[in-house]
Length: 142
Image (cartoon, rainbow, N blue to C red; front, side, top):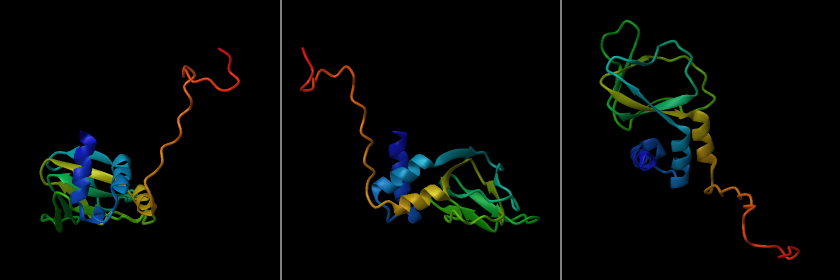
């Protein structure tokens, strides 16, 4: 049920709009949802940015410049913050705070890039033959 809700959410996010369902599934499996209470810090200005971007799943967050009382930007449900470029190693330009209780989806940029490169649904790995399987080969005796 949780995966179905996450898939429905990803369908609403603009950056994922043109992706195939299996690509969204790959992103969903690689992502992590974290909860923040009002005033909690999602990331601090000047910190090295992790190789991920953030999508607001529920609630809202604000981006603040050091020393400023008002948010430079507010991000609400389905909006994203950060870079989708896995090679973008930079410092956080803002401190991001939860404006209210917020659920934030962390999407690893590398996994996002890999999902974009997928051109077909992954095929499942062949499973090992069950040793208790009743089928016998041509050389098996009864």
